[in-house]
Image (cartoon, rainbow, N blue to C red; front, side, top):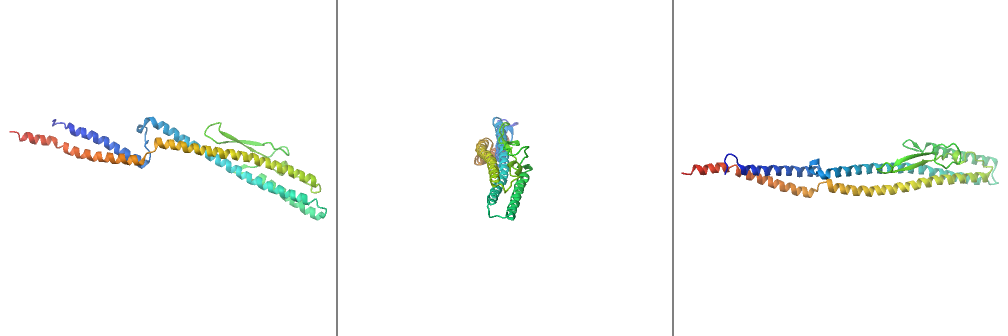
Length: 278
């Protein structure tokens, strides 16, 4: 027995310090919900955990891009539907103008309504926008169904993961209905039919883009869930396990305190024994 240095008590104290650290770590994991609060907690997994976090954040940003782009196209498609409805009304008026029972005044009224419908089409074409991006971009020629502008929209977390969004001229002038003459019913109906086909083709292009955006959004959602599951397995704390660790370390801490209290009396007890030796 060493009286100057109580080695038994020092050994218990070392164990006590380790249990205090374990107790503090378990309590921190419970309060934060993470078992990787710092790099020293698990040097091998900290890099993996941060990489997965970045992938989750970039996937979320890509999903937001897709939602914004889809909302823009939905806004444009709503106006294109209105243009389609206006063209249908215009065709109805043009056909009714071919009746021999109409007076000159009746035809004048029909022409006035057709002009109003054309104005409505131009209003929709020129004033429909999403966050400052307009539906219609002017073309230098009429009956032009080629994109007059193309912008790229990111739909993934890589540089090449993007989609081209085309813009068209859907004004009355480009649709070929700016100079309709109800006195020539066949020509007017033919021009309106061509305009209707043009608008429908534009809508079909936007529809195919929407389908791709939605399928990409579903893919990113499934990918994001799998990444989050993996990241959670690596970085998130198992609260039930941490509670067990906390209870275990707390019990050992209390036990160490009791043992140290007893071991600190060993030198005194030894001196008392030696003092009684005759």
